[in-house]
Length: 246
Ligand code: SAM
Image 1 (cartoon, rainbow, N blue to C red):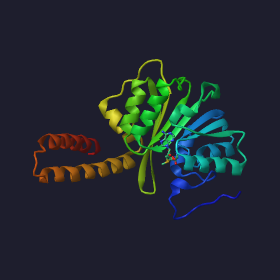
Image 2: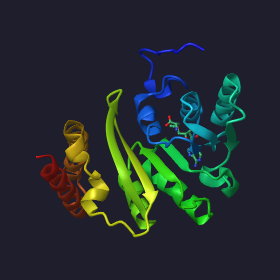
Image 3: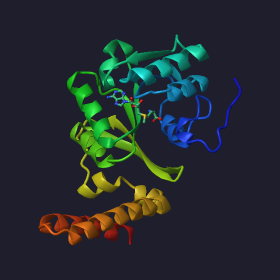
């Protein structure tokens, strides 16, 4: 099949050969020879691209919704990758077994709260051995992901900030650590070295957030009911961001 470059279409959904920048950057963190679990794999693009690149031995593509599950299954069948990619219907990490000997897990394109809850459910169900690298790409709520990782002894080994289609995305890569890592409130919220490594994008991201916070503050201040506590909270949040991006 030829490489298709889709112009003018939301590049989130390109194809197995031409991944979106966001998925490509996430896929770069999957080590060679991995046994991968891609959770929330609506088109199975990420595992398919990694098969093309000969980077993975095996993958489970997990999907909780039947429609996207069938799409992923069809995609894998169309490419003839059924022997390498097993598309499974199920919630989060419930689709994997210890027998799969998974060495890398990608969870991309979801909110940070959902990613943290998928990890948490999987952790309690004994699906995480600690031997797998976690490659996580939350669309929002990154702080929840970092906090879950810290509380479960996962060390963040890399972070990336990128822009695609005028949206800003973070990628967080973690591995199990012997000692519990300790991150400050500021690191949990703003990331580890994102400011230093991606100064322009970092300022853009938090400037946008700041504008949202200003709007909320203005509506709280205009409210007729007593909003003193909320106003104080938003002022603190705003001061914190202003200090960071100044
Ligand atoms: N990972 C792809 C990407 O980054 O482009 C797809 C992102 S799409 C926005 C999120 C997908 O995750 C949807 O197909 C959704 O059905 C699936 N999903 C949401 N919650 C899930 C869960 N608990 N377990 C498995 N899949 C889930």
